Length: 426
Ligand SMILES: [Zn+2]
Ligand SMILES: [Zn+2]
Image (cartoon, rainbow, N blue to C red; front, side, top):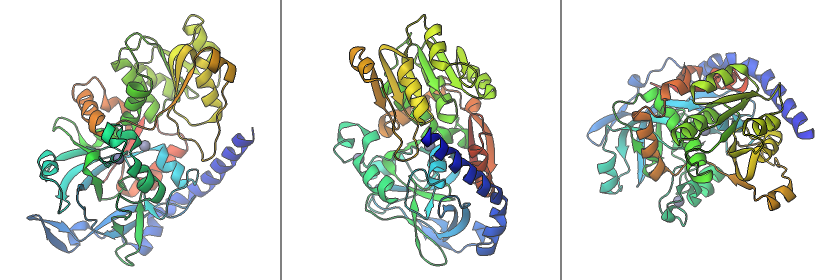
């Protein structure tokens, strides 16, 4: 109850400030004329081509203040990194958690972690194999967990647990030499990076987190491969290990949850149950593969899931919201021996409750999963999208311009986005 009240007050606070989002463009035009076009910037020769000297990025300053668009010195990649001209960036709740102060992160920072773009430069000391895999001019998609490739987890192929990613990026807002690649044009002040800092015209990404995107896949829709679909794939393939014929319930059918429905279908799940509080999202869930839908504002989702599965519960339940109440529902919806997979990030410090005796006696598994494994999984996701087994077009419901970045997150916060929204940067 207490945490629900805190959450409500934060949302109320946020919606108050949200009305000031309309000030975004005016605010930014005072400090940084949006009219300045990249082509007017000075250029510098790079690797045979020419890059502008400056770029624009959307900066988060402090909780509950609007993003502003600022000019930066052109970021430069170091060894093992690529500079990407960003084409599109998905609008994700993880960024929103940071922007609302629910998950602490170094600030100011550039948010955005679900990107597609074009490789424009390699780090000067990068391995020739990296350059062969991702030549300048390649179309690429980036995963939000950017594996270092060398730590104890990466060396075992567990890219989703990369120590450098968590120790440097998530804990400090930098890449793996402990430094950011982003510096403001006017003051030279460093600005931190949430993942690659993808809500910008260019971004630097460790090459291990990047895969080539075939020409048949569009830049805009493919952005969601790097977080929403990546997260869903990690949950279904590694945490839940879904098998053909499994019954799967997904609680919360936003961008990540609805990707879970599609991946569950791709993996051959039989009963796929979507749980949400919005009828519109549940209706859409059917196009993603849901065989049953439950509006948990109107009926008890646990009772209903148990009824649908003939009194047993599901093999796999996925929680994609990050709320204590749905965490508990997730653990109570699985059958004996079933897997309750948690992929929704919560406000920092949130705790989930589990019936200990049922967990022990009936071998309930509660499994956390943050994302997929970039080097192994990202190429597979791309193939799923390329072959149409995963329908990217269905998943992306809305697009925004770069200048509308603030509005995109406001709409996400207000629950107005069904499926996933993507910001088109160039
Ligand atoms: Zn995300
Ligand atoms: Zn690593």
